Image (cartoon, rainbow over all chains, first blue to last red; front, top):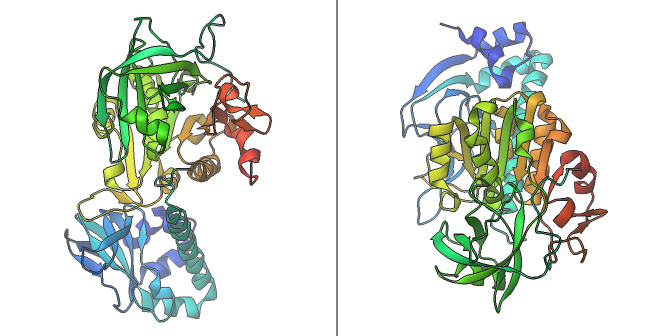
Length: 153
Length: 285
């Protein structure tokens, strides 16, 4: 059985993180399990947690008028969910829902922010990783906006 | 550039005279995409290499370049998967069994799948780009023991637009192909991934330095996929893309499909990323 501190360096999001930083970050984390249909968070909730998915599937959803929610993205093993904990006003923008048995490591956003402010090297290391995820998601979103498979040219 | 590995029509034949083929089976795959299975009217088989295309002629409507989507081992049948996007393709997809169609070709080079033997193979497909890759996947599955890990990363617009669903399941179950499908827009009933197909490249388990990667889809998607594969370490000469331009003659005479010095109908449509990277980086080419 691995502790969170032992597991984190093997997760792509935390790869190459200094051992001391990994230990510090692990101090803000707990294991959390979700049953199918359970929400990790709802749109408008305080963004006080972000999640590393160890296994399972999480959908990011937006409410659509007069219809079911629209799934705009999914997160799977090795993905992370939620970056609003790092950006004021610290509110969730989407619903996040487990659609199968999902195991995560949940990080206390306020705890991470406090550690990042106390030690800028920790804050910078976290920020770099979150920005990488944001860049990947932005690229995905922009490219999908082109509706490449729907267009006829 | 790729070598020209595909069979060609005999040099004595008039390159502009289509052969007669008869539609034997007609299947609607998705909302706007159909597969036709044809047989040569004179019974003479047509050999082709995975990745080649033909010029399909709907009499009275016109001609369009269509990739072959069938099994290269079945020279008695010609299979084409066609998206209904214009007057000619509209006539083609509505050709019912018994209809006679004209075929010129096969044209262009192929994927040269056999050059991947002994290593891993990664197929990256977007939308109807799975159709030109299907013959290559069938070829790999037919000699599965000659290849290492085989991955198919496939992106579609919606779950309803996913092509060859039965094939995807069979390739995974019977041939050990790691099939990963992602869609741009998913609804609640969809249990798979929602996102961009290129994101799958970063996490795919394959030995990049000993991988043959074959990519087909919209050009923007191919550019990003090729870039991601190259970043992973796939050698550019072993990273191949099937390019689409306005093929007209199919035999390198008219220049409609010219991509700078390359005539895609004869030098392509499959080219290495080594050749394409500088060309794809330039606008208006």
